[in-house]
Length: 268
Image (cartoon, rainbow, N blue to C red; front, side):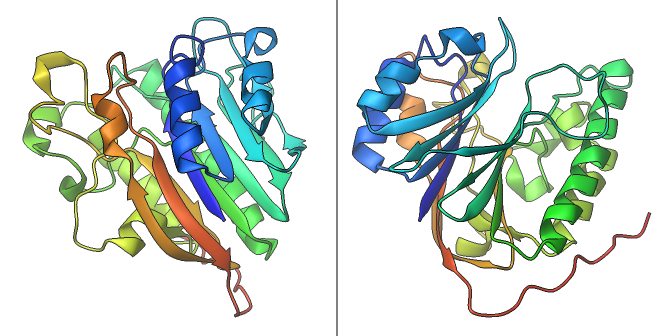
């Protein structure tokens, strides 16, 4: 199964780029973020004509997530991250697709920090840790994928010292992301290409794309019931005219042969 995540940064504006990429790469499941459109205006018809059924949690102007499936109807599980009924941002979606549970997420950016937005980011990540632990302990095949808005290590950014004040590099979000990984999840891109730098985001400002001044903030995490066969970044999509500032990240996964273990509890 080929799975992928892409922060499309306005799905209506970039629909032609999305359809072209889907036609060429043929992923089985895709998580989209930053739809920037209400659910009713999501281009489900155009995507269905391309062979993809959609499950969408949209939001006008900001946020928005979707899961696309080729040849299967996504079965809804959750339309919001548990733990805070007052949180109305469209940032999380779960569905069962072809025997695998998929969570598509768009984690809060957290800037400026310190401040309320950064505090919200940390609370959101704690809720995500708890949900990830529950999904891991289910023993089922699960994929968590999306724009995590966390640069895990200094090796995942072109020049960390120029971003030290940014929420994406702060110790607390890094520790929160590491706590999720420590449950046992496999970082697909890192597992397939250990020691390599695979950027997924290049800011529009300061000619960062031509200079390859990128960051790795889009991640695919895979449970023990699945094995990562390969993974990569379709970075050429970032170079298209009118492109999103993110590139699609993909992974090839298959069913693993061993029995999953329970999540390891991170030290708090």
